[in-house]
Length: 359
Image (tube, rainbow, N blue to C red; front, top):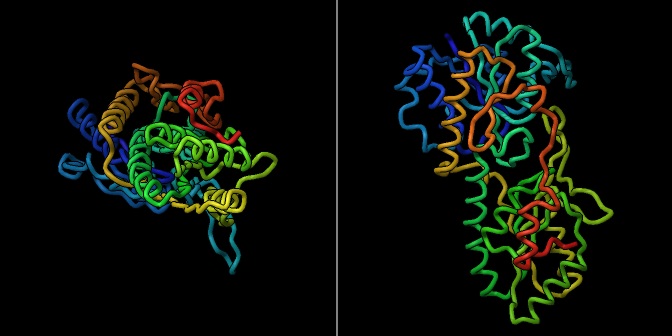
């Protein structure tokens, strides 16, 4: 076979490990050729490719990001272009299909989140053979137990919380750490538990500033004169809405969140009179070398994707159904947000050890 591979959407640790596994499995197991598509679907539209052989992928497993580049703006079915000074969207999927054919591809392995995989699914109706691999640091895809990149992001936040603890305790401050998580609080709750957070604010549980203040007062009553709060960017007050940083026209996610950490800190200073500081981790959570768990999971995904391509399981996504890697239809895997269950183990465990959710 001649297999194409692209990485779409936001980058995350483990992408290169997936690419490496696709290439090594294709060459060693099946004697295939592999073609890399540059910058996600943007490269499929503009026909920018590179051959991927064993030399090209040598040593890339520890590297963060993706050697192919990525894009979360170039949807071939709604391609944004500026015409006469105005932003217009047009369907250029036929161009992408023609480039798929001109490169003599038998299959396209698409590595991405819900949006990227939705585009991949649409291409199957145009005759492309597609295999999806789930990727997101947010771990919010419902059809897989976990996604690669998530474990590394948790470790990055945990390391930051360890450092925040020491300065918070030294200065007797309330420290608010804002992390990623638009609609699902998996990063904040997992890292908050691992990093010893005292209060965790997630999108699934609206918070009350007064309840957060009560937790701070209770800690002071026990002689703890500092508090570390972990807040997901999509967290919101009871009766309120998410804090929006700005609107970006033409992007896959037009609404950019940000600022909830500063809002929480400001409100707590007003209510308690205590000094509160905010740290926003931002894209540091997407970077760095993947953890051992993510390297193994990414390798399993990549190897399985090539296997299922040879089995003819197109329009499917590989997924972790512990302990196995399985292939499920893309149409069943998409548009189902996996949020933190309120009665699930993470929330129950956090409450048992005294962590507050501000509710």
